[in-house]
Image 1 (cartoon, rainbow, N blue to C red):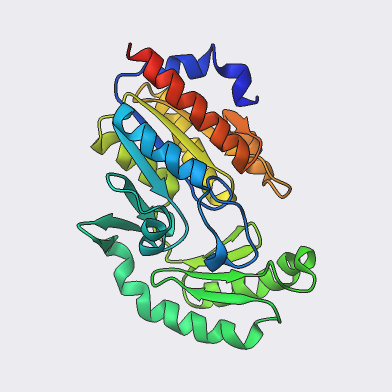
Image 2: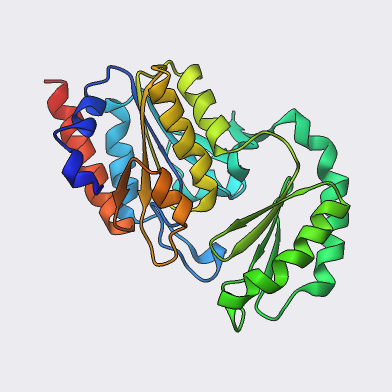
Length: 269
């Protein structure tokens, strides 16, 4: 269901919650997808809206697969909570804090990185994110066929080193085998900030954990949480199936946040 069809039903219930939180992904959600990760940027309108929403929310948070340092730098708004590497890193007192259970995996990731390098295809970008590894293949000659041909290679390397392999939009990720993801991060945010309501926005496979957690929190009556999936050309089927609501791309995220700001202001008057 498109979000505009729900403004008088579930979204109206959401904005009435006393302590409401907004949690958003970056790439493909508030920032357009680009060929090279370093070239990405959050749209000026989304930055403006995140800042404007802060006084009307109990929490405004950004969670990304990027490092938390990169996440904080891209948004760079004071007062927000920043989470990186899919929940493994949190920004605290001006620096990254890492989930203790993953620190010991650094030598393993370094060894896996060395095993991956000889297999890289032209156009691939191997990104060392400290506590995870990413292989971007958007710029390869035939990206549509890379997943089938390259995934078995990475799965073998991941298994050899006791790591977990995840597939995203034109990216492979190797992570320590720990139960930390965007869903667990959402749960922590809801409990730490005592939220009555929460809205999560995301566009990729790694956001599915958070969308499932939103539904679980709502069904368990812990928090009235809704998951919003951002539609795109390569939208994962699991994201569409799990989302409570849909927005039509980054520009529509701007429209949704504009509505949320107006609705939140109206609910407090």
